[in-house]
Image (cartoon, rainbow, N blue to C red; front, side, top):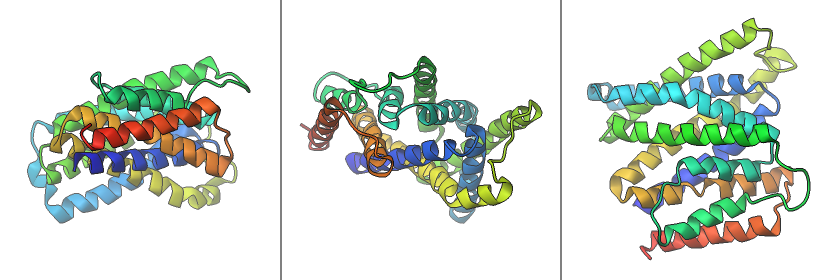
Length: 274
């Protein structure tokens, strides 16, 4: 089950990252973070009420609060990097926050992930700002996953932890958005509220897919070796790269294609216990 949950994580994160990066090219990154996380919090709140998750409240929820404070900064940097640079390069670099794996077969998947976003052999080079933002987001994502893993030991407890995290995400992101607006940066896109309403379905998908990915990763880590869960979950850049290729026509270099193949081979070996 570890492999199933971890691979589901990579699929959900990959699609959420693609959607978030796409939205950030039309909306302010903070707006994407706040609105998507608000919608996710509403859904999670309903799940917590339906499952009685509030009964799992305890001191361990402080880990979820910590994740909720770190998360918005990581997402903001990541979405901004996706808007500035090629998704096929940014996403694999950001996955370094989750790739804390041992030597052995795991190295095959790790090398594949890095090469799948590999260097731009031709075309424009990646801006230094994009690289810095991506590395900051990588550290943030790694911290968030570690904190959420400590925040719950049961499924209903996980729902509560994710809800608390999202509420904190909205509070921290909302404060940052307010400060940004006070400095003169508009919160709404060109076109105002109608344009934002038109983006709500995609914003909801990004928020809920991100929540679901956090949940499946925690389940993967609880049901088997954390190293296996980390490597398989870190394959999400391949999903993002393929989505960018299919929808945005971002061309993958030969080294990126080879990297994606290596990542798949590594995941199969890990899933089979090879």
